[in-house]
Amino acid sequence: MRVCHAPEAVAVLEIAKPAVEFKGVRKVFQSRSGPLEVLRDFSLTVGEGEFLAVVGPSGSGKSTVLNLLAGLDAPDEGVITCNSRFVDGVNTDVGYLTQHDSLLPWRTVEENVAVPLEIRGVPIAERRERVGAMIAGVGLKGFERHYPSQLSGGMRKRAMLARTLIYDPATLLMDEPFGPLDAQLKLVLQAELMRLWSESRKTVIFVTHDIVEAITLADRVVVLSPRPSRVKLGERIAIGRPRSVHDVRFAPAFEDHYRRLWGAIEADIGRPQHDHQ
Image (cartoon, rainbow, N blue to C red):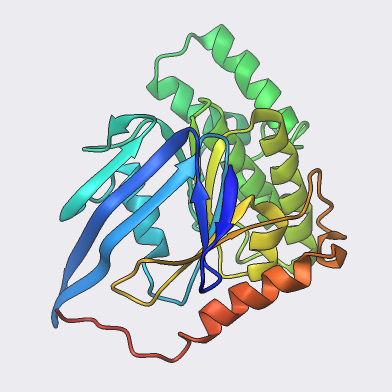
């Protein structure tokens, strides 16, 4: 991947092996007060194995991008491809971790993690082996038979991550998964996510409001404009891996990355967004 700096500090990125592509996508929702155009002529390419973070002002369509790629919504115009296939329905190539707690309260940790394998008809013996390995991989060994109500917030997030990873999706979609957590626990889970990603090198699209989190985790950060949204800035993160979540902000490149990303977002804070077209 090469980075070419365009005149207005926008990084134009050439990606050799695209895993995800949005081409000329438009998305309009119907609200009580009329049509709400969230995306217009939205184009984005994510490389295979790339960790991409998406930031932008509230209401700029970050979650909409994930929902479209997951096939939970359909674009009004344009084309979306994932692993060279058109997304025209529910996309089983992706795992989707939302900010909401979606664990089934009547199921134990191991039973929750097993759900995707049950749906796919994986034999019981293989299912038990894979579930046990995944639970250990996210640091929940010993809590297999606990119910969600018996777990801390961070442990529930780990269980949700294990359930997302268990069927080995090619691409991970993560919508502010650590947003509600306290600062210390967020650092722990960021480190855990980076470890898991470094082992699997899956394609990740990670939505966050936290610029520090975006720089810490990602290979590249894109900033969305106010709606109708487009990619306003692409910033390749020039901080080597492996990274320490505790030390990344002391890296020489950190301050420049933060300044450019914050500058791109700050310019749009408080700017009216166009709701009706």
